[in-house]
Length: 318
Image (cartoon, rainbow, N blue to C red; front, side, top):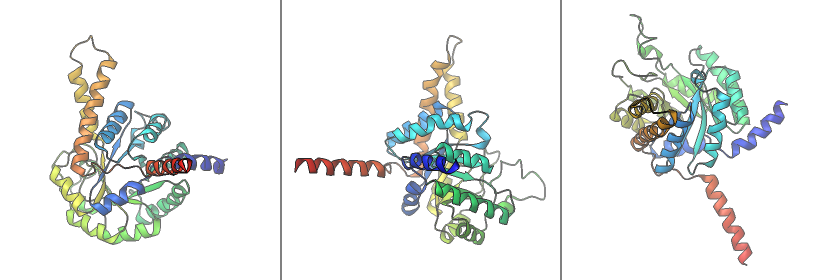
């Protein structure tokens, strides 16, 4: 039964874009692509409309911690069709899959990319679990991201007097060993960022990014991107970051827009939806311009389709 499902889902995934198809070029040309989590239709519309407007590749998805607000299966029902219809490359990605079962479910639903986050585990356990999942993901034609080191939660985990953030940073030698042994397609590294809204200005270890980038061949991922300065983003990309995760910024943008739109009790939910979509679109466009991915949105599958049709037309003319 699983093999039958897997074959069916493989055929679906072929129609989508995986991370390798967008991130390898980003790594080569020194720009970054954003992952924007979309737990509802308004977020998804704003993200994809921004990508199409700017002709930019984009990664959309959801994270396991966000399932209470948008269950995985329900999210897949709108994200995957929207990605297939998009005029630009759209990767459908599971962000921070915490359990094997969650990752398998995402692959079966047709996600073209997953992240299996075992970063809280000891190194050898992280390596073993990710290697197993990488083999499974690749059998679906999907890509996989892992995390080494640990990106925290803005002081929640680092509140103890004897705990320093640097203790959780990614070691460059371990990063090389981890990538070689697991076969992951992208690696999220801990270099001073944190998830959620920042309580204090972050201090990014840019030299560590550069060192790790020189040690491994796969694209590097920066988690906890919301709230960083424009200069932080530019330097991180220059040093080797190819994928940047954003959620808090677009989440707040949508809420602020809805509050402004809801200026009287005569308004209903349908009056708030356009405001949320516009706000998310504007926030995503700002990040895309900053990341340098504008104009990079050619779809290879569309190019191949045009080529095939052209050849068929030429045959008919002969």
